[in-house]
Length: 248
Image 1 (cartoon, rainbow, N blue to C red):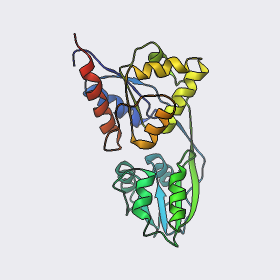
Image 2 (tube, helix red, strand yellow; image 1 turned 120 degrees about the vertical axis):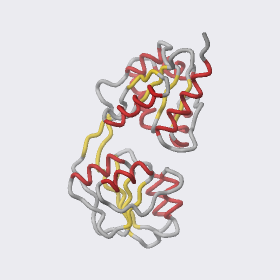
Image 3 (tube, rainbow, N blue to C red; image 1 turned 180 degrees about the vertical axis):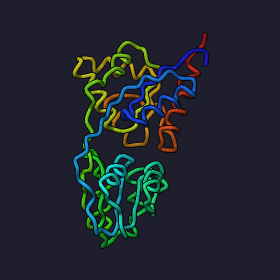
């Protein structure tokens, strides 16, 4: 890489953003950290007594554990290995992790098992209906508990300015909500189209098809969707895609 590749990254402003910045720097890129999501706990905990409990994020696990909740005898499922790892760290047994780390992948994994069962889904206020609808179609009785709300931090928006100025070589979106919040901030500045144009001059990477579909529906050209739905895979693929475009 003959010069640094500036990569916008939208992880929440905690250890996830710190590790994302460290990873991008280790790949030779210049991170442009711009947290698009902040967590506001609701104070709720997952309902007890269900046959299955589904936790979809590391944040959900941490909030439930901090409140003293445990899955008890329920079969515990997580959407991906990162969430499963945190659940195991707090002392829980994780029974199900789908091969595809998406709501659709989890539905496919559980489809044959949950007919007639009660399923507790504990997650953010922006969870996909794909999970609830798919489980209900499979014959499960599903309850959803909102553990936390995802809001846009007041300081967010640096990446919008950089995109408008043509100062991004890449952007790494980790969810549909990060895409939507980015565009909302651009619209508030009166620069939505300019921000999209700036992204389309860069390499845009996303985690998973749902995020790709959201981005493309708003006119953003998606260049990278890694096979593995993790930030490490996304960051690596984005930097590899962006780096060859630069020459002295």
